[in-house]
Every structure is written in structure tokens, then in C-alpha cells.
Length: 466
Image 1 (cartoon, rainbow, N blue to C red):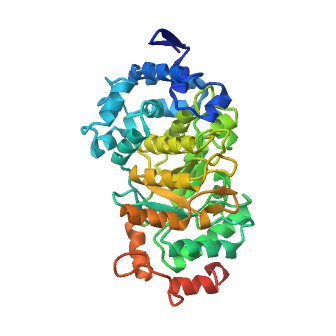
Image 2: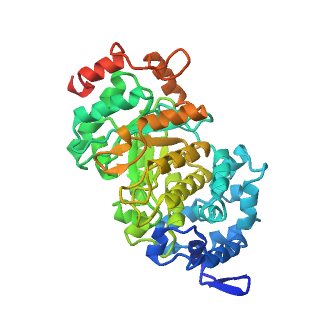
Image 3: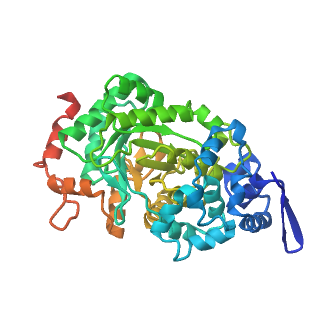
């Protein structure tokens, strides 16, 4: 790797390689400090940004951050790069690219055509030169529509994941949370449960419950148990009703090894999901979750800053044509994103980079109880993300996940956001809400009645009990 230098006033700053430029150009965050790669001063941070702005985009195709020979994620990124799509911007520097992205010329169709020509490292680099408003403005122009039983990512719509987790995986408790969420119009992106114990029998029991609820009430959505990929593959072999295949992913081969996966295993999961043909309006059947700091937490970051590695995880996701990708932005904790300022910035970066790369991005707007953040901060981030065109947000009962022990958004948070910004659920799901008498004559969510078939059915027994 080449060294880089930049003068700022009377001072001259030296950066030993591209990794150093990118790390020092990042906004301040605790994870990069923990890794010992953050800029030592604001002046050094600004010098790095000046240096980064002058680097040609095509340089990222040759000066790779993680060695090609030893990292399959790097090989995936380089080997699948679309040179024809890249031609539009191949003459630009990172600074030129930022200015162009903010121009009228970079409209929605143009950005869609460009997506496969941008590498994750390019996306991360340009994000480091942007203010929050820049990230929002460009992300709002990027649209990726995905489909399974519902259509997600359309303009004027905001999807939601209904997350009915339970600390003991109790089926009645999960069914009750599902009812609660459906009455708020939540769940058009997915009804997805994080199992408290990742074992095969529990996974199958949860899959059968979710599918029974969905099929009994003919809900045009998809369900998912967020078990490890190998557990889901075994459940598929045993005939369990799997809609989406889930896996947490990261931006380096070593970090993915820590998750117990390889790109080959992801390809196997993708093929298994496609073979089931359970979608009705489309075939996007993969669900990925990511989060800044995961590679550092497993000692697999190779000296690369956490935001660039997060973008590389999106490079992994892009290869498998997912229905859903979301950043669990504040979940790992203050060691990686210390406070609300860092969490909000990271959420906007993740949405921007994922959408620029052509992904159907969502976010779990969340924080842990020992972070310097509160629910007001999450209100700010969810509103900014909705303006930035995020495909979906995650919601849990009361904004408090009683199994994972962290704070997220509540069902009424997403409902209120839809009203505020005049956003609708997925069209198929909105039509179902109307059929189930959960919308009034003005298209607003109606007060539930005990005479409603959904309420009556789920209050008296959950479908898994017969």
C-alpha cells in the first residue's frame, strides 16, 4: 500500500496507507479508538479527509484493504465488480464523487444503474466526506425494491419488522406480541423472532407457530426465525415452513468465520431458500443483519475502521439478492458507538452505504442500557432514516426487548412516523389491514374491536394450539 501525505496550514500529516487515511477520516467513534486507529486530533482527521478527497475511485480496485489472497470477502468484491456500470464515475476522485452524488444528475435511475459498479470501500470513503444531511439527501434518491409476499422499498412506503421475542420462547407470549404488533399495522416486512435458544426443536416450533398465524389469517407477509444458518438448513431438510433464510454477516472472512459461516455456506442457504418457492409476488428470500464493530469484537478487523468494514458486509449481502438487510446500529454497545451522536451518525452512514450499493436497507434503531443515549435520541434517528428512505424499521412491544435486553422502537413509534410523513405499509399488507377491518374509512388505523376476527382468534387461542 502507498503512503499518503497532506498539508493543513503549517502542519504536514503522513498516513502510512489507505487503511490509515480511511480510519483517520472517519467521524470520531469509540470502536476506532479501541482499535487504536482513530485520528489523534481533529486537525489530523481533517487532513485525512482532504487526502481522501483527492484519491481516484479506481484506486480502490487495486489498493485493497484486506489482502485478496487471504480473504474471500475481498475476492468477492473485486471479482464481481461491474466495470461497465463503474465507467460512469471511473474518472472521478472521492471528492468529485461526493459532489456528483449531490447533483441533480445523480437521480434515482442513474444511481440504480451505478450500484453494481461501486465497491463497498468506495461507498465508505465518500460517506466520510459527507455531513449527515448529505447522507440523507443521497440515500433518499436510492431505491431498491424487494419482494416475497409483500413489496418493500416503494416510494411513499415504510416497512416494519414485527419482533415478538420472548425470554423463554414461550409460544403464547410470542403469539400475544404478534397480535399487539398487527393491531398497530406492524409486520409487513417480516414477522421475525430471535430465538432465546438456538436449537433445532425450538426453531421448528417457532417456525410452525409463525406460519400458522400467517396462513390462518392469510397475512401477506413473510416470517423468519433468526436462528443460525446451519440450524435453518436442517429445519428445511425436515420440512419446516421456512420463508426467509437469516444470517448475521460481517466484512471480513475471519469475522464471518467467527459467526460460523463462509461464503459457500451462504450460497447454500441462498439456494435452499430459492428452492422452496414460497414467495407469491417475488423470490427475494434472504435476510441479513449487520452492525458496526462486529469485526473488531472478534479480532478480525485487519486494521480497517469499523464503518468501512460494515460497508464490506453489504458487499457480502449484495451477492445473495436479499429481501431484507438491516444494521442493528447501537446493539453492540458503547465500546463501539459510545453515545447518541455516534449512533445517529452510524445509522445514517449504514443506510447511505447500503442503499448506494443497491441493497434493501432497514435499521434496528436501538441502544443498550449502558450507552449514553435515550429514547429521544432514537426518535431523532428513526425520523432521519425515514426521510432518508429507509426500507423498513424494527419494532418490539413497548420499545423494550425483554429477551435481548436492549431498547429499540415500539409499534406505536413506527405508526406515528407513518402518520407524520404520510408513509404507508407495503401495499399488499395495507390491503390486508383494510380487509381485516383494522383501517377506518379514511385509511387510518382503526381501534381494535373484540368482534374483529383477528383479535378474537388470537385472544382465545394461538393457531399453533389447534
